[in-house]
Length: 304
Ligand code: G3H
Ligand code: 13P
Ligand code: ZN
Image 1: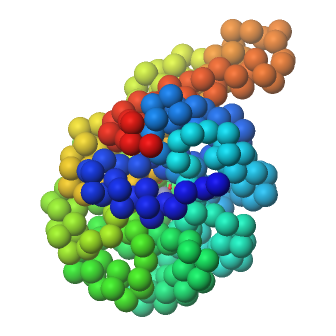
Image 2 (image 1 turned 45 degrees about the vertical axis):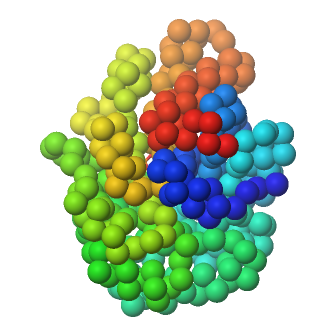
């Protein structure tokens, strides 16, 4: 049984840590992050983007997450990340996701409110909570792309939350999706976050928060990747964001980097080995260790 995302986040808000949200696309990624949560006794949110669903199928991903939630002792919530397609959001609600995100952040303020309100009505009928986004988080991924970052306006955020009734809010304070987050120095707008926290009482979410650890980048490059110019969010800025009120942190890129580095290593070192278990097993292990580092950074150890 999945747990309520909202319950996990309200507890985190009271106790001042952040719940890890990990994007999953397949069995090995899911198992890696769940094993990390179990080892460290942390709650965890398993999230599927529309891209993940298009790749693996919503029923397969749902089954994987549901099996994990039945076999493990730690609380697992299941979340739709960056929902933009109304049909996809409806399917997630019907399947019993713990929460859905409606991402209408690229629309006008009024359209964003209208779309978010509609999803809140649908989801709340089934006791499913809703994450919305205001401002734009930069970066470019499959279905989530934006060139410029518009920081979230604290006064508008207050109005947005009051008018939509959303349960958590993704805020734009300088992070961006993917591995190329900052052209120069990595800076998050902690002052904006502090003002947001004063104006808005619901849990706040940080997207585009991967750290892009240099050890993973070096490993991937050693085995053939070309990753010049990558830059993540430094740990110190994540800690500050948690201190200033972030209670859900999304990580996808770091898992992808771990997967990539580990797969490249086996293929390069063992060119005669074509057993998928030998190729994907080390990726699962490296994902687990990256997820453990994230859980420690977020302060959710022993919060299960
Ligand atoms: O925030 C976006 C996530 O990293 C998902 O990316 O749409 O490529 O699956 P994706
Ligand atoms: P990263 O690309 O920084 O891992 O962010 C992932 C994310 O925000 C998923 O919603
Ligand atoms: Zn995101």
